[in-house]
Image (cartoon, rainbow, N blue to C red; front, top):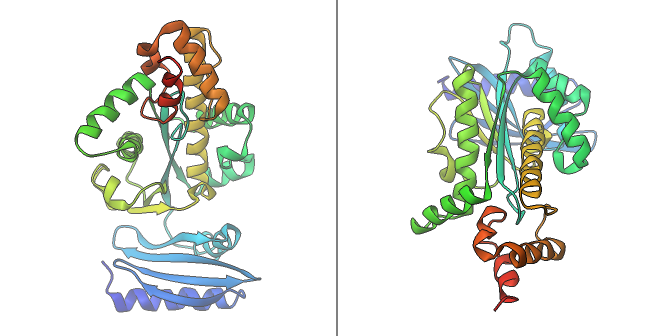
Length: 302
């Protein structure tokens, strides 16, 4: 690890370079393994974490705030700087977490700067901003152009309910199951590729809940609020959503119903009709039964 004083000197040099481009360092905070600075420019602000290791060198990691300003800072400090090695990272996201019907899915995507730029150029963004048809189209493009650089985990309702029950007996909950899914996708993608400089996870929990599940390696774990602003996480969100939609389609074909996302009245109506046709014991096959929806639906049959 670089001596703290030397890291501070390099950060000062970076701040000076940004100052020449009209970007001002407004606040500085020392982290356990780096330095975070809040920058402002053109009425925008963002935070950047700076790290250094012998293996990876000087790292510039966005840590929240305006994404355009963050990317401009990265271009100034990294993309336009000769002699800095190519950067790689992995992003992960999930789908189905708040949906009563269907599976829980997670995906991880491995990128370098070239692939990340390619994703930006073709319009890859947070899947929540896209229609289902657009998600399907983008997911196909990601799969076609990213062989070996993505991993998808899909936990069917039946398996979800079994695993949730096992975790509940240990005093754990659905966030622990979600952490397992993220970690499984990340472990798989890192088994196929060199260890990246960082792993970005769209934040749903604290570090303690997931860090112990992740593979060992000299990478930065970045649990990021609104992580989908990163192209790797955005691509992962699309693949996870696409896999979730596949899960709904499988349920619909198997039982002759219209399985749908969400957890509102229309979902309850579909599940209520399903229970009327197939019985309450079959509910495990289409829904996450620990949701409050189950009590509402089954109360109508007592």
